[in-house]
Image (tube, rainbow, N blue to C red):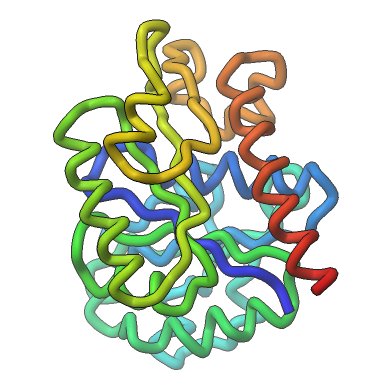
Amino acid sequence: MGEVYAIAGGKGGVGKTTATINTGIALEQEGHDVVIVDADLGMTNLGGMLGIEHTPTIHDVLSGRAPLSEALVEGPAGVTVLPGADRLEAFVDASPENLRPLIDELRSSFDAVIVDTGSGLCQETVVPMRVADSALLVTTPEEVAMEDTRKMADLADSVDTGLLGAVVVQAEPDTTIPEIADELGVTVLAAVPKDRDAASDEPVVVNYPDHLATQAYRTLAQKVGNFVTARASD
């Protein structure tokens, strides 16, 4: 049985989907069999960021119109992707409550299931958080983002989901990671520096293999991979 990790951020625009994509791909490059899931059902953009146009989607699976096997597609570096649809009617028909059996099915087939959740306190966050073994919190160094991230940490605690740690994105040279870790009350597993060259060209770990942002995601993937391996040997 694989491990399920919910990628959560307190507010939109902090780089949650970017972290999902790059962590998942870097973990695949580490030798793990990985699927990344777009569970932000109201604002799906994971597939679009990867240039993937594929149907059926997670929305079709959740609404009972298609089997899960037909919605999975190969992405960059061999990672498996479960993309979403961008049609409003697809969101209306897809119930977040059906995420649990879907994610449990993926867990039985992959070493790691990396789930991009919704922003803030909504069903698209709470349901994946309940199903996940652990949550990885994504924040920028901005105080508002960190305050919202602390709320996500409280949510994880309230649904008995472990905290894998946090990743700080858009880090500047003067960003003090120990202080952020203290403010969040969570271990910071990696700090991804702001990379203006690569900001609009995902995935960074494939398109910019020598950049500092890529090195940070690889460090994060190695740490996540250690958890995956340890759980598999239990």
